[in-house]
Image (cartoon, rainbow, N blue to C red; front, top):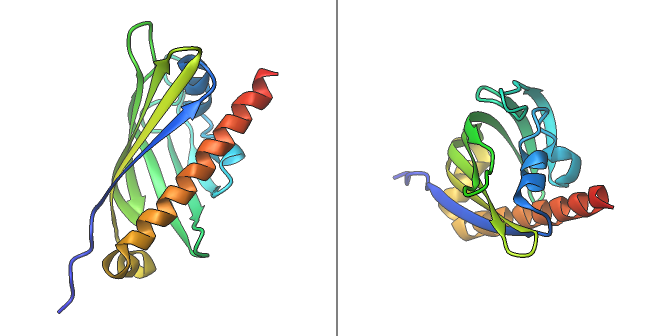
Length: 168
């Protein structure tokens, strides 16, 4: 009997040495530039919509290839559902729909922290949909979680390097 594919709820928190507005400028850039500084990502295609605030607007999307530390890659499409830039008394927030090798949703929350620091909280609630991703989720969920954590840590290091290089 075949077991159901597992749904993962994966939460990662990044600490970034920059104000929330500066971090939001990078994360919400309409051209979806995450692959420029995130070493595990490659953009295969994208469609940018600039919202009235100058950031990526609802309907923007990117099809990405994510290289896993175990040597495999998965292809996902992220569709921006909604976003709100950080303000004086509020965090920035974006919600994304995820499709492709994973199905579900993701959210990004960017909060101001003391000392011109930011916290970026990324939450993924996804189900692997097919092929090796679905088999790995059933047979080795801990390996999937470990792989996700490594990819996310590479993203944090890449964003911190990017922030520091553009601040000088």
